[in-house]
Length: 441
Ligand SMILES: C[S@@+](CC[C@H](N)C(=O)[O-])C[C@H]1O[C@@H](n2cnc3c(N)ncnc32)[C@H](O)[C@@H]1O
Image: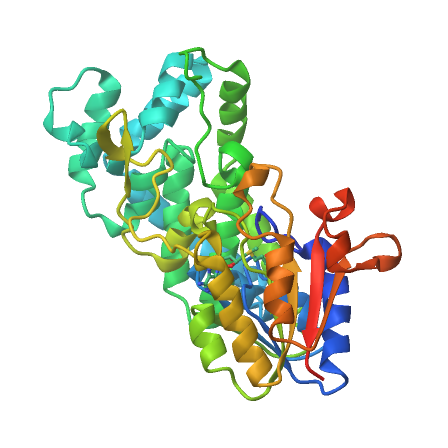
């Protein structure tokens, strides 16, 4: 059985605070001052912090993304699928997968399987770089004269599967982020999950997301960009080809079976955790009176989180997401990452808006005498340092304008060093996680 505090990792999640969750919980408890009020995790992300906080007190977990709501709800109130229910789920999903694969997808699945078996580098590259059926339809590929067998199969699939809501993951992301067969199985698993009661649905969908996160062939294990096999100067990267072949080998059904069991074996949190999909501005404007402390871990880079996890958002919502366009060499084309047309843009990721967004939170909380624990995170090493949106000085100035007591701590540093504004630019603080406690009492 997976118990609390054993570091359950639901998905590959950039910037998750799993490592710091004990320290965050200790600082929240101190700010709470023994009142045992509700703590609000205002940017819950992967949900790992909410799960840890739920051990000590009730939690209101908030995030703008539906995938986060699902992951958090499932981690804190997991539905226990009995062994027989797990088998029944898999049985239904296999039937559903057969019906999805028994369409125009079948030829694409066979073509890909054959290309991988023969090690056909040209075809594998084509599949990964141009294999999205939905993108092919958007550029009108299915209305042009086809140039290859592969294009013919894409065209047939684009026509045959048009608007097919049972095959969304296959149509959009098959070939690119997942193998076609893996994508069809993900579609089937999600379809069976959508048919369940809410609590069971969240747990099953969370297991589908864990599966997608494990199977994805991409840069960094998230969904910002598929693997690029060909470099800009046309060279093929053997390492990338090998990585794709390795990722496409596992059966999605087996991977899911492992995850459904892991999620089913999770212990619920001791205290209730309510997970909400909402904008932080709406929540702080109307904060329940029971909330005594807010833990906030907003984004700090210009890259919007929604860019990294858009495929999980599509799985969680079960909608038909469309593909946003990007301009490449003067022409509009579907974005290479196949992003959803509606993608949330956080004010925390916009240089001109981030200070105002933080001020809004600080003002609203200070006015209600609610304490704040703010994470200030270094830029993940996948990003460029210049992409950080607010300096620590700016953050502290905003907090000090609203709270009487503001104390910054370098998280997990030896002796948990405190520091003041004059020492901010030491190399220690530049790459470190900082936790800032703010209170008026
Ligand atoms: C740094 S991550 C949080 C990571 C989280 N603490 C964890 O341990 O996984 C920031 C989160 O803020 C969320 N977010 C961005 N804009 C938001 C908004 N306007 N309202 C609510 N949440 C938002 C993102 O979806 C993302 O999940």
